[in-house]
View (tube, helix red, strand yellow):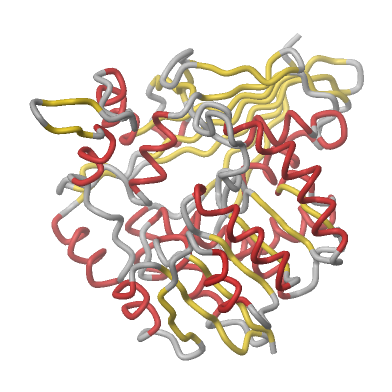
Length: 413
């Protein structure tokens, strides 16, 4: 029987814990977080789980918890990830991360976060390979399922030129709830420099800039602007463009939805800055002030039910990959659309929010692959680097959760 340590019991980590309860190969799930009350609230719902309060800023505390586990699932904020990586290496276990681990770049880490990917692939890749273990990063819905979907779309091409990834999140409650996942992560993504892979190179772009308009049927055919956003996919996929994406030269992640509408004016006003400013006789960090006024994401059935009983303003979404290139000597476009349960349907099926259902369960599917020994790679890989067989298995399992996709190939020349 396998033992799994989950660090961070927010919307994502708690979903993985709940799904692990159903796995026959799992004997124990250790649920750990700095927030002891959140841990207690989760483990009382589970039979295989035990809770622990942990200060993840102290590597030695993580090591104590991680001894003897088969896998560490890291659902903590990215700035704590380096400690978790180091702890996994020390106890010689497999490692899964929902995002790019942070804290690897010493100079201007928030400005240069994308540079950490090379450190992951090179230094940490060699260290995990040396202990015969696998580290997998970027394992939620985006990145994660998005990388798998992009690989599936590119499979239709002989040669790829450009990949666009679009995410629109339109679930909106009547109460003030701008984000259905961690506000710390959400707002951090809004204020970091965005990146794109353009003409074969990583370029930094301004958050909320360079809009691209699309009319997707799942959004009622309305014309929506999707903007630049700090996301991992162009960094991973750009580094692996020749090996896994048929030579793509341009890779973009574009984002839209309720969170963008909320965060854009805050960014423009400087209220997402983490640099202290003097107001009267006080030093104030604008980011912290904003964060203090945003409610946490709901994760338990009772609180989700209360929000849904109050009513939703909207419950739409889109998750689309466009890949442009050549097939049989012709210029073509491949368009892949993901279909997933909306907020109401996700709650009816599982007692989860739509965010938990998609991101948390997408993360769990990677965990399931670890439990079933599907990963033969040793070292560190990102979710876009799986084999075609691993990709197919993932999509088959996703379909069982009603996370399905459609593909259309059309000539553009």
